[in-house]
Length: 348
Length: 277
Image (cartoon, rainbow over all chains, first blue to last red; front, side):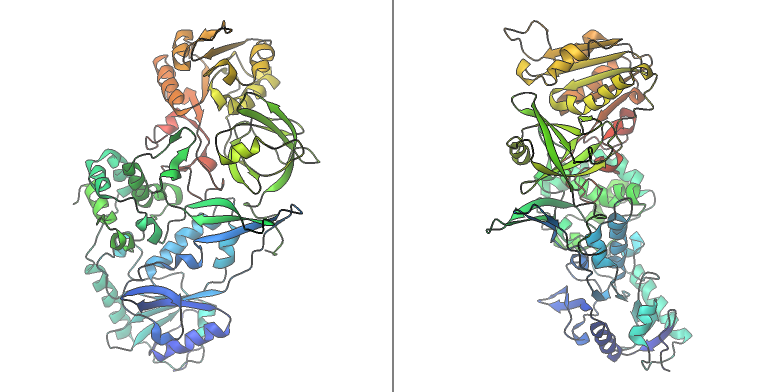
């Protein structure tokens, strides 16, 4: 068959289709990022060719968050001679090839933070409005993944332009078209008709991936139990091990906290107001004149985990933990947010 | 969004000029700011504004008074930005954005007796509410202001405290300092102790508390002892806010942002938050 390029259309394709999709994204002016295995780990970086893409499950050690929420950005410049403020916000054309369902959910969480409410953020919007997503469903669970507990994976059924699921014979992929743009990326491609067995294989592989998750966390009633567990002795136990290094918050796909500050270069002619990632693990984060909301490390560690497993639900109606497991991987003290949730709720 | 348009950008300030600077104490100045047209925007008592002094930085300040043609911010010198602000002169341009936050429940308090309890620079946000009450004097019952500072030199708004406010009908002003001083014949006591001594009647009264964290903590306990219910006590919280619009996460407490959901909370609400404030 030949793909018509319509939203809702499905087919089975080979890996050669990836090259075509990548080429078409690039032709349309997108900088395309994907998960590449480098130095023994997966990272999101600009793709040379589709052959570089890692199909291994897990979305890499760092989330693609930096593409829509850069670690540091200039909000406006201030000309010190004229006193003029200049804010230049250019639309950014980026695409992600191989983003995983958990990271798509993290992106949707950030959409609510930055674009919801009375003050939509124009910097985020410029990077978000034109952001094609070619999603890889996860057919295996990583050691620290618990997306199936958080309801964010291993499969996705919304908010993708193209959705790709690896079937059980190597080199065969179920391709699902989720948008008009997704359609354009595959129009006229030669493909096999997707048969019932292919869908059955997809569902079985996703079910297996969920069933084989080695990390789990029951989320029923979790926010209330976390609130009641504010004084649980486990917080002391883990905060005694915590280095306060902020690795967990640095690799979290939903952390959005920031510092805003003025920076002047050596010419002394121009000042830039910048926004830079910040982390609740920093001592200065909760500092006010004459006090600190979270002076002790236990307060700061608890703030991070409570925000993910409790406060975010009150604020946005969803957990700002998508179960990607990166904070667990990166913790030098083996502190585990899923274990913490289980312990506080009494399931450990 | 067109590249040069800052009109829809909530993070780019508009420009105001400093039209007056009043030295309140050795480390507190009251800055009056305005545009050529007057106030940059309407502000309610207790609301917050982000004030920028480029190229030093930006900070969140509570409005001290929303006059008809200018806004006032009483600012104590405590750090990099406030040090720099204390060096500026009349005519200086500042960036401003806002207003942010809920402000004091001025409407819901109508018909009530008002008890304002302030410490140090904590009088600054209360003043926006106190002066609001005096402008609409008949809408509020008795007004009592209990204000304390470390020393006589630390008392701000002295003229109002000693002359203007006591002259208002049904109004009592109590001022105290922490330690005795030679030329001070007024009260010497910490605010919470003085509060318990004065023992104001909780009946139909709302207490509004703002001051240093330790004073707030103790004053809330004293109010409870005096029979004030949690929903009769309101306070205004602070955080080192960077954005003011619920994105930087700095003022997060529980499921609240002080900038969006506060800064004014009643005690009944605060009791539902993690004990971090």
